[in-house]
Amino acid sequence: MVATWRERAGDPRGVDELVRVALAEFDLSDEELRSATGALVALQFRPTREVLDRACELCRSADADERRLGVRVLGELRDLDDPAAALPAFVGESMEVLLALAATEPDTDVLIEVARAFGYRRDPRAVEPLLGWRRHEDPSIRFFVACSLRRCSTQDNEAQVVDALIELTGDEDGAVRDYALFGLRELEVDSAEVRDAMLRRVRDPDDSAAGEALVGLARLGDERAVAPLIERLQHPDSHRIIAYGLDAAIALANPRLLPALRLVEQRLGERPDVSQAIKACTEGR
Image (cartoon, rainbow, N blue to C red; front, side, top):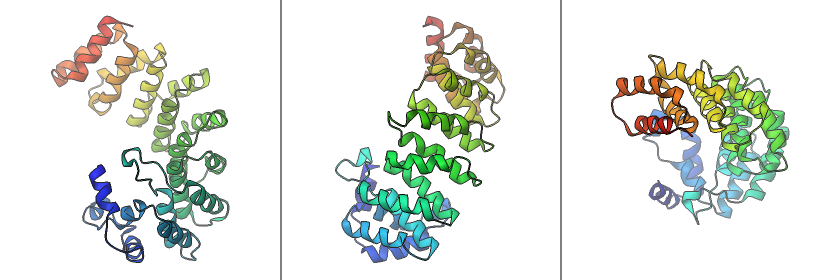
């Protein structure tokens, strides 16, 4: 991955050409992007004043597509001193532009990019507009609110962030619920409200959301995860959640899970992750 970043950062094309090509490639499908030229990524991995200024200029354009591109570039300008850390570059300058757009932008597609960009900037100033969008009618905006809030959390705003993520675990969109639960799990906050929110979703129709809820509850040591986890492990389609289920089993280390884990072993054969879960539940906490 680092080699790819260095390759993109060394793209010989000028900024004007990269912008022109990136605009043409912006709405390509994932399949089409595989054969695209990577102009957008090249811009994001060129943290120069020239690229920053051009992205800010695009954000002031009358054309919504140009504003979208400007936001995408600003959101992911990377500090290349440590590529693996993917630290943001020009945070102050980019946040000034993004916050202004958050307050005034009329185009939903641009706002989606702003909500996404806030997560990459990791700046607590983004929490206020993100909180304001948690009930937005567009599920894509709510999705990026769920994705970005965790990354902008600090000790000072954590209570607000957690409350919003708890609310989003009840969203009508499965992907939003999934990332809200993931955010709560990553924040490692333990409270009755967080546990209850996770418990409500352990049988979520979205497999990924259910998996996040089970793992989150298990890592908090809440034994209310045991019964729904047994149900999931015994289900004929448990392969759809097996990674989550084994992770939760390891965290719980509860002998009650052993019969269900043995069934998984019969279905899947000997696997290191299954063996690890069985070992953890055999030894107990």
